[in-house]
Length: 437
Image (cartoon, rainbow, N blue to C red; front, side, top):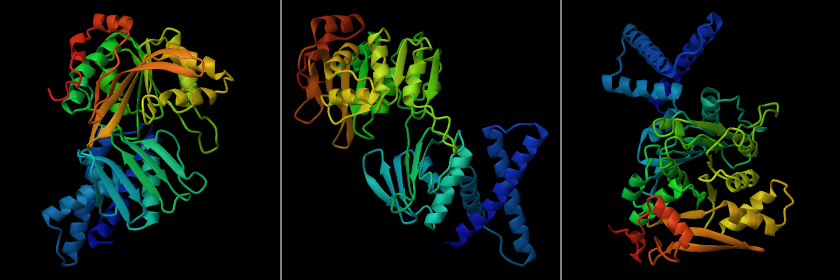
């Protein structure tokens, strides 16, 4: 541990104690908690006080005081340790960093937005220090009471900036921390086109599909950009449509665009408390959402029994609903959906489940990582169910380089509907797509 880190830890402990005392005093006096802005300002004042006290000690002992640059570095490190994530905070603040992987006190890796991975210095001097940091974050930033110990070896929560934190201990060889950062600023199809995820034809097709209230499932692997695309499609929804979002954690950020979505409600799953009570699952939320008079139900990620009420909602009038789902191709969505419906204990035969899927879902949009760039690779139109099989047309299929290009024609009634909602059918005439324009 460096001398500077020793100093940072010393001042951080003092600041945290004084901050805790101030919070307790406000609770006793009935003042309530400080706002986030007030707490940040107060913490800065406490840090300045401690640094002033340190300078006085050094001068009284005939020692040297910290230089202005060193004092600034210590102040920022203490602030990060008090209200942020200590030595992890600079990576959180770096806009080029997408994911942060920490394994114990030795290994830290950063995944950048260009797809490259780089090692970084350790963020803790021991595994115990990393565990203590994770517990501090859980106590300070979690919405509900959270444990992180041998009895509760995993932690899943959202950070104030919207990033997703997952930590595990005891069942892993070393305590591990993974943070996935979300780009809420990427919120339109125009921006995704500029970044190369879609081209002109796909942009027009997707915008018209949302306007035409087609039910859409977005698929892809981990970190492929499913949530980013779903967020952009959400912002194509007409102004007055009532939207209910259902998420394991608030990642869509619909509340960040109130001018685009004035009538909405956000639902988030909740784990059980430390006594094992109070859990609210995605399945519970999906059922709740149907009682909230939605025009569109948006499920952040389907991975269990919530698939059944979602499909029922889609097939019973809540057209224009959307969700994401992990899959390695647009075709493998169908058996996964059937398996998820089975998790809801419906006891429905596969033929009935497939008929429900064919009735409920209109389009599958699949994303792949191609040459380090997230790109739409396939769009599949659902046509019908034939017993144990679902009939679909891949209207955009991977071209020679993996990027989606026009393939099988859309059905006439679908094409007419999309054209009525703004789709430019001339964009289907370029067989290699419009990627280079």
